[in-house]
Length: 422
Picture (tube, helix red, strand yellow):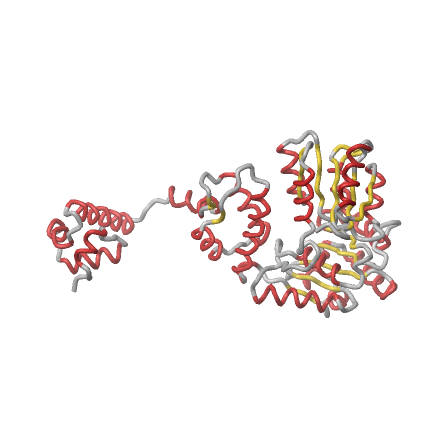
């Protein structure tokens, strides 16, 4: 699995670093060893060849691996990061994984285990070979559209609700384009003060210059002030195909947020990602993939997601899209008491609502009838005729009530009667 892979190693300990470098090379990987924070920051920002994964120590002599990852995330899309530490804490692990880190190892660790988990990080899917959005027809169309856009030139506009995977689509487009050897430099404008947008985009050593012949990914482009949008359009016209390619993301209301001249320049190459409520099978596929990854890191692995929970996943509207799936699944796996994920683990609010709901008169009457019929059946040992006499109704009336209220006859009565009453 590691044959020919390009791995970055960030470790300031000569013995540990030397051991890891030697083993990775024996597995066929090409290793670049950075022995400090500053060297790693420069080398990972502008690599001569994209890295397939990064193995990084948390504690470095001139900084921390966590700060390195977060710093890179401000301007680029980092490769999958596997962190190593000799002083693990649950809070730190959760913080790193929520920030986007791929895995976390505690020293001392088994080298074979490390290689196995590293192989998982660079399996198909990180490379852009596997499905990204799911098995549905809509998901396949998204993949086909990404492939067509990657083969063309010109700016691309990716639209969709929050959590639908717009950034992942941009990464896949970059990986499949002839610009993949050059950097993908990403800026989320919603996380940057509007007064800093121009400097972060066009200042010395800013995104437009760092990308070179690669791609500049502007997330939430509608957050850019009008003057910055105008400057962006002028830069696109000025550099043409000699400069970076722009890929921008926004919600489906992009036309309302962008200058008309910028919007109509971006809109000819548009990819719209439908929300998960329009493709429920992709929601279940996504949860299954997330479950596999989370379950490997669980102290006591679960057996799986129950059929009842899967059915509930297919019916849910997933207003938060992929982010909601991740949040609900993380909560379910932390709180699950059985061996399987159950509906109440994923949707605890439904159980709470049911527990606190005050029944109407009609609901109370139906519950009372249901309870009384069940008592009559139990007292008459399942005999429909005897239960009907106890309740003062005919067999047909009792049968109709049972069907309406969902009361099941005892198995003994079903076997004896062999048929429903007339």
